[in-house]
Each structure stands twice: as structure tokens, then as C-alpha cells.
Image 1: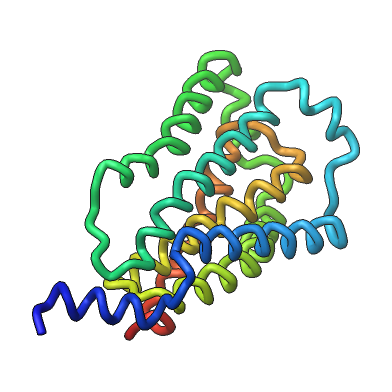
Image 2 (image 1 turned 120 degrees about the horizontal axis):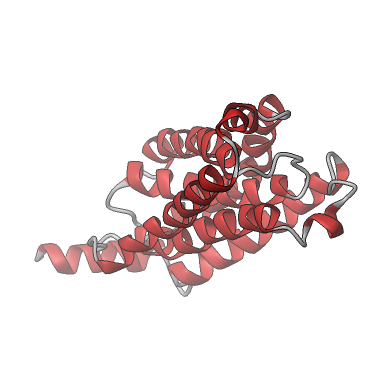
Length: 211
């Protein structure tokens, strides 16, 4: 049997009647529901949520985190297929970092230098580093289960992408509670927390997504 026919056969055996895009979409929606329930049962939105929505820094946190989750979703769905090759869609991963970088540049121009470090350190760094991974675990587990129904050719990369997407979702919920709105804080602590989830996803993917 030719290699391409073998790959097609394996993929069809692992995904009978359910396309990867649909599987990932269902997992993502279920993950959002689980994380939403956990969020409102634990931290909940900050008291001045509605007033904060009128500030660009607060809104920026959602733009970055949701853009990260959304741009990664397509790549996660593609990673479920054994014949996936890297292409132009991979450039979508640069969207959220570019938006965040622009926000950081604006912050450095409009805020006095003496305020840079206090804004970077913030007030809730420790909570941020715990809350984002905690809120990401549900989506990550569901995305990995969805990917197991596929036939990924690169379990490590597929797991890392699932972790990146889950980290974006978890960070989006935490952003509604976080009192630290500076792009400097987001660039450091949100990035570290999401990187932690991404690494966890990569390790889990390498173990759970092998054929």
C-alpha cells in the first residue's frame, strides 16, 4: 500500500464521521463552558468591570487573548490530520504577539519611565500565574481528547498548539478579573502563564497523541 493511501486509511479509521474542525469546535465550546463556570464560581469579574470596558488597556487584554485562542484554533484542527503541512495559516500565530507588542510600545511612550517597572510587576502576578493555568486545564483536556480522535503526525506540536489555544482561553477569562491592565504586565505574566500551559500541552500531547 502506498504511503499516502495508508495515511488516508488511518485518518478515516480514527475519525469516522467527525471532521477535525467540528471536533475542535465542540471541544472549544465545551472548554469555554467549563472555564466560565469555574471562573464565576471562584474569582468572578472585577467590581469595576463595566467602567474598565471604557479603557483601551482593559479591552486590549481581551483582544490579545481572544486573538491568540482564535488564531490557534485553526492550527489545532489542522494538527489532527496526519497529512498536515505548515503553510500561510501558521502566520496567524503572529497576530496576538504583534497586537501586544504595539500596545507595549504605546505604553512605553505614554507612561513615564519611572512607572514602567511598577506597572510590569503589577499587583496580582502570583494569582495570574496560578489562575491562567487553572482556567486552562478544562479546555486543554477537552482539546487533547478531541485530538486523540484524529491522527496527528506530530503529537508534540499538536499538544503544544492545544496548550496555546487553551492558555488563550484561560487568560481571556482571567483578564475579566485581573486589576492589572498595563500591556507591560500582560506581556510578562500572561505570556509566562500561557507558556506554562503550552509546555504542559506539549508534554501531554507527546504522551497521549501517539499512534
